[in-house]
Image (cartoon, rainbow, N blue to C red):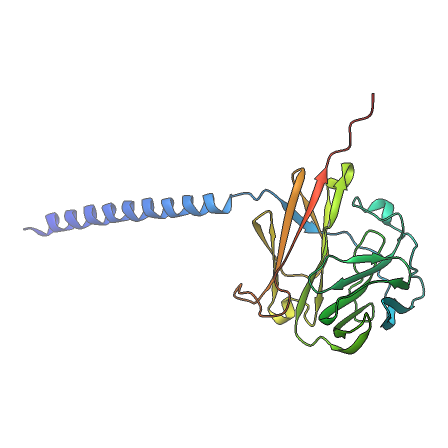
Length: 266
């Protein structure tokens, strides 16, 4: 076999292998493009900036004989007042104004517009979170504006309490029913205790009607594209590998309803 023929066979083999590898690479690229181009049904985007209320503070909490009494100090935050930018937020807003969100265990929050109010809690041990909220239900995410406690209740009074020490996630919004224009942008807001996500390597996995979104920043979000009717959101605090963090009340699921404006009467 002469040297020219051997060289010819080498060139043919090289070209055949190159074509095969190129074809395989193109197929892999096509598959990746198909995976990357898969669109989600729902979009999540950061909520617009809100008044900060940096000095709003819950100074004390007392619960005796089925009644809460909160001590609140602030320069420009007042329960029952409308938050100054409420008309521009493009989301559901309470006409009763700013309020306290009270969450006991895994229950939906109770909105309270005064510092003193009646509220029944079953006897036993509970996790309790209370935080100051803007009129459109966005939480004030500062150490001073919330209280997170493990409590023991007996006879509708707190008999023992201690600070929550483990990282915890509490669900806040969305909640209840949304009608008409309020259905276009739904605010997703949650509250974190003893973690701020990224600094600790944690994330929040938000499953919106089963569709997964990973959130690595503690802030409120707009959710758009939700259908009319009953929707669900499941929130899970996860570690850097996406595994559920072993902490109380994790995960948490809520359902809420979107409704069109009722047809005008004839």
